[in-house]
Amino acid sequence: MNVLILGGGVIGVTSAYYLAKAGHAVTVVDRQPDVALETSFANAGEVSPGYASPWAGPGVPVKAIKWLVMTHGPLVIRPKLDPAMWVFMAKMLRNCTDARYAVNKSRMIPIAEYSRDCLRALRTDIGISYDEESLGTLQLFRKQQQLDHTGGDIAVLKQYGVPYEVLDRTGCIKAEPALAAVKDKFVGGLRLPQDETGDCHLFTQALAAHAAGLGVQFKFATSIQQLVVEGKRVSGVATSAGLMKADAYVVALGSWSPHLLRPLGISIPVYPVKGYSITVPVIDTAAAPVSTVMDESYKVAITRLGKRIRVGGTAELSGYTNTLHAARRATLDHSLTDLFPGGGDLKDAKFWSGLRPMTPDGPPLIGPTPYTNLHLNTGHGTLGWTMACGSGRVLADTLSGRKPDVDISELAMTRYETWFG
Image (cartoon, rainbow, N blue to C red; front, top):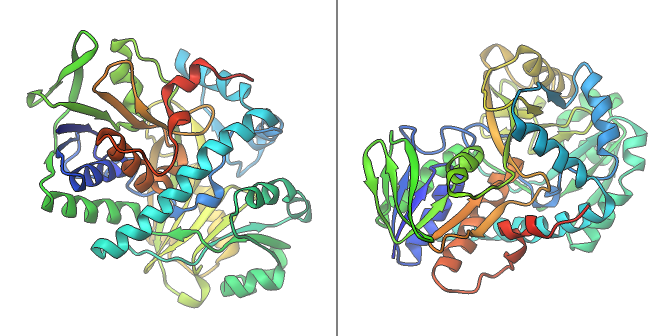
């Protein structure tokens, strides 16, 4: 079967690789000159299935109000005259209940855990390298109140069999020795030892090269204009390079997926939530993190990637803009220098932002559409890197007529026809 994948980020490339492994002829189309140059380029570097949780949850509306007035708050809203923004926020609020949180979490954990296993198998199969480490994630609590309120998270981890460790200050320092220099700034932590780290951009580039060796074709610098349909099938994709045809089509365009689908009468509640990062060179290994440290107070992830430190955070609702705001960098700078002073050189920091494709309930959209040969693999939010390999694998299995190893029926767009809350 000939498959055309729309989008060359980590989701599109993993989909292409697994489809090619399954024997299909695959073409990837992207407007950029290479793979992973947008949202996949400089994310926080975490592969964290243990933290695969919906943003919408009980208590979040009250927390959001507090975050909006914090100097280094993790949430920013820049209102737009965009109905999609307000509809997205309204739907997100509907999901801020205990019942909805439980349902949405149950849909996210299996695909995230499966994806980590697929990534490990991939490393074994092809020896791919991307500054990867398997040293866990440490969620660091600056206040005792934060540590005291981990009971709900721990209950969920127990429910899904995710290994964890509750650490006091000494335990945190054992996991991340550089924290000894700032031991008075935190009280403890929650560590997930099976989480991994790695550079998503390096991974996607390396996997694209392997995919090309399997026959995958990449059409770069090619803008995707519209889907052409005949009845209930897609007959082609109009692009800047002309009409492209295939037997099946996969939409993996992240935040831009709704724009392509809307003219077909397909409405998916995916909206961009901007994230920021800085990448700094390590100047003192002993003062730098070993793996990922999640600064719970500011919702900032500080991750070691080889000879670099990646600091990522902020949820900014500001539409489809990649404007770099200095105040957002100040938050990232503060978290890094407060916890790992002297570890990285801020003078050489590279400042970046990317548009995460969020769904209001949290789980991604993987599966069929009302058009028989059109499929979705989008809406992964902050977990695109965490869920990429599993998402690509289950999509390839589905298109190949095989039953996926994990049930993805509740990740389909049809869930929005029956949701409650």
